[in-house]
Length: 128
Image (cartoon, rainbow, N blue to C red):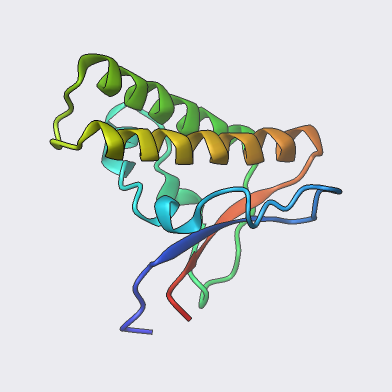
């Protein structure tokens, strides 16, 4: 798999939640372009890549509460960037808004997973 390139990231649960499609609840392409792991690390949060599994790896399941801490911390960061109208990467407000929306989508899935006692991982995918 030397040529594997992440194009989409799907939120995978160990068991489905009735009347909720977790696979379509988060924009998988936007999640792949989030690129905020260094920001998570610098804030003492678990980077999202720690929850990720490539197709050729054996899945490791995680507690949604672990992911929520990171997601909420990064969402607060994006909100600060929007409030200041600046960020260290030169992202436009539109890009930061997309990142924030993606984080809020992921937060919703993880909250529901936590309420239903599910585990999760982030499944890395290329453009099959």
